[in-house]
Every structure is written in C-alpha cells, then in structure tokens.
Length: 422
Image 1 (cartoon, rainbow, N blue to C red):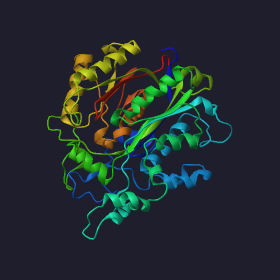
Image 2: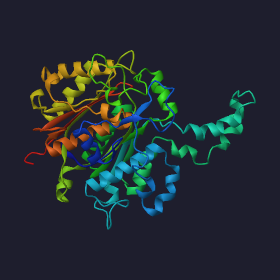
Image 3: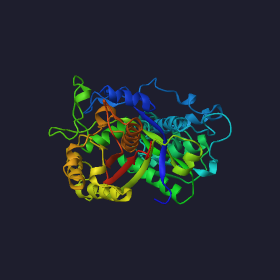
Image 4: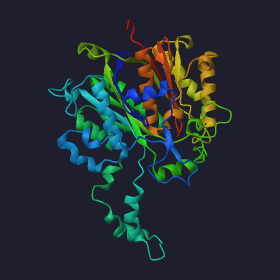
C-alpha cells in the first residue's frame, strides 16, 4: 500500500470490562462473560443470558472531561460504551487529546479522523412507553393521529439525539477533538472492519495521519432481543443451563447465538507517523477486503464463495499465500448456516490449512456484540500478535486472519501482521 497503516492502540469493551487486559485474562482462563441478564427481565425470552457489561464496570461521567459531563445525559448505552472504548484506545496508543492526558495534543486535531460502526439503536422501552401510553384510548388502542399531534411531545426534547447511530462518532470526536474526516457505518458484525477500511483510505489519501475506528453496540434491550429472536438467531436456553456451553461455534449441534454488548475503538495510524512519534506498532494492517453474500436468507445464512473471495482479496492485497496465515479469528456465532459458510470459505481459500489452523473463538466468551463484534475480534488479534501468544499458549504469529460474515450479508477479511523485525 502506498501509505502503510498500523494499529497503535486498542480499547475493547466487553462483558469482562473495559480495555484489553480483563478480556485477554478471561480468554486465557477459558472463562465466559455470558451470565443471566440484569438489564431487563428475560425469563420469558428464548434465552435469559447475555454478555452484559457489569453494572459497576464504569461510570461514564468519570470518563469524560468535567466540562462535558452534562452531555452524558443524552448518551444511550451504545454511546457510553463507545466513549469508554475510545478513552482506553487513546491511552493505549500513548496519545494526548482534548479528552485524554495533559498538555498539547500529540497529533494536530485536524489530522485525526473518526469512523465508528454502530447499530440501528433501539430506544429505551420505559422512556418510549411512557410517551406511547399517552396516545392510547381507555381500551389501550393506540392512536397514530394523536401520537403525531400530541403523544410524541411527551418525549424529552433531545430524545432523538440519544438514538441516532452517528451519535457514537459524534461524541467521540467532540471529546477528543477529532477534526478530520468522520463517518458511521451500520453493517452489523462487519461494521467495525468496514470502518477500519474507511479509516485506512482516509490515511492513505493523506486526509489524516491517524483515526479512531471500530464499532460498538448494545443489543441487550427488549426491542433488540425480540428482533433477533424473531430472526431465528438466538439459542434457546433455560435459567438452569450452563452459559459457558450455550454458544457452540462450528459444532453440528450448534443452535444459535447469545447477544452481548460492547465492541471497541482502535487507533490506526500511518506507520511513518507512528514511528516519528515513537509509538509502539502493535500490528500492521496488511490486507482488508469486503464482499457481499447473495443468499435467500441473510439472517442465518451466508455465501461461502463470497467469504472466500474476501479472504483471497485480502491475501492478494497483503502479498501473502495460504501458507503464510498462522491463526484465524473467525465469527463463529454458533448459527449453523453462517458457521458452515465460514468453514467452507476457509477450505476454498486456504485449503486443508483452513481447518487445522488455530482459532480464537470469542462469541462463547463475550456473546455476539453485533456492530461491535468485529472490533473485539480485531482487538484480540492485535493483542495476540503483540504478545506472540494465543490464549493459553505461546505461538509464532506473523499473520492473523480476522473474518466477519454479518447479518445482512456483508463479509470482511482482515489480515493483521507483526511488524518485520519486531
């Protein structure tokens, strides 16, 4: 690539907590963050479990500058998690920004972009319901005309600003004064890698020297869970089941996935710029390609050929062959149709190595973080390369393949590499 790009900071947010350390420790110990849900009463749902961030894991008001604390009133859960992840990523990259550190910014604000993947955020049911009920008759029949004239007036004036997908990037850019190109991508599990691709192109064309990138989402609310349950993606479970065994990626008896919340923000930076400021280059972005699955059912199936095309394109971009890949971080959602397509894609593109290479499986530990899931995958792959270690064992990792095959059919293949000589 004309202007190579590297990852210099990672800030994942998962059921294990904020930052890479608690997540990596959980993976090393073969633990799961999937537990009985506390966000709402899930006893009547197909699955009463989720990868939920502990309630006491962080307080958003402590993660923003004092002058910005008033703005936290219009942050939904997704925004809060994105702002938290961004702070950890910036600190991990050794950057000083308007929202982190003391002194002048490490990088001129107009040279820092921001691209964050997001979901189509579901509103808080209690907040919406309190206004909704005002447009119901005595027999609880909803009147759309009344809602248009008066009912919606019972929502708080800034209600919409809490739930627009672009508000994640909006708040992150304001907090850290990122004045470079900014964008939001809403493509389910592929949102974060696609956002990283956007950041790469911005840096390569010289419009920025670094970008905050990634994706975050929380689907742990009633409306979002209902939609995923109706889509046939959620595993059936009872309260007595062991949450560690619910998600079984690539197993013949895999019966669905479990929702999680989180994702992550990463700092991506032009390599020559990172070197000039003495930053630690954690991983190089050697190849990143995307394709679209064309299937009759993009909710629970994917196209093996399309995923394989993405892998081949990424390897060609990186100048690598199948023999160069050392490990894989697949989606592995536990949804059989998508899992089968992933396995077949690996066989097509990597041959028999596709079935024998070591894999880092995240969904059984974190749940499916949806628009944030790809960011968790990228952060873990980066840490593995940095440590030259798979969870539980040392390994030689020159090139790690990260795959997403999202609801909606967007596929990505990203190859992260160790810096030569490091």
